[in-house]
Image (cartoon, rainbow, N blue to C red; front, side):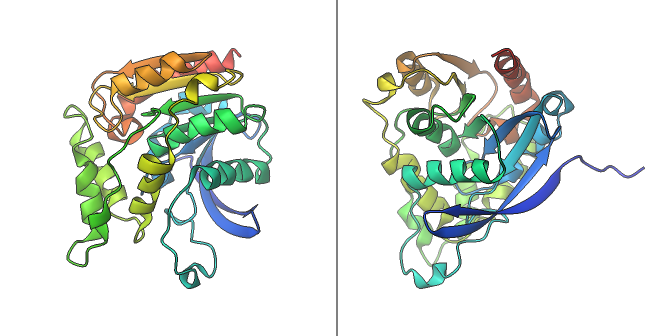
Length: 283
């Protein structure tokens, strides 16, 4: 018999600040399940979350949705992007805004938002600006500030941008993670559009500086921090420091996992994730 996965892919036009964005997303689970919106890491797309989309234990109670940000994966840039003559730089304002605009277009009521790396960092901004619109936040590999990852050399004409992006992050994965999943993650990273990884890292290492603001979050939205012990971009200590300052938060440090837990070792990550989802179900 054919091995057919339950994932369904769709496009939705998302208006935000005078521009319409054609955004691709994939989903599984019941239409009336709790929306669980998954945010990919810098320079990649929603394919990173395929193992969670295909896990029946997760999709039993949650409508799992993995989106591609504009310019990423199957989501094209806005029309006339080639006329802008401006370097792509992701900002916290745009990032949080387009996520919430996407949720509004799909009529998602009080979604749970789970993001990794830059998707984890934006959770802090969402807690600050959209606390009344979100049920819970799962901030994977997140911290207040992670400088030093804006890679200017990626645009050099003698460098293959895709392979350089993929190889530059390969060491962020744990050595215990299965090779098939580590190289799958490498493959996703090799396929980003020109300038996209660098532009995402502008948010990750420059625009996202939440120092002095974390302790001011109201705590209205529960925050679950999850970080792998092999992550040296956002170390467990960096995550623990952010969690200490965050009201109504919990910090989970994951063994045998690096910076891309959902794709580099999904079986281990899902074991850590399920108790978090059970707590959210009980809210």
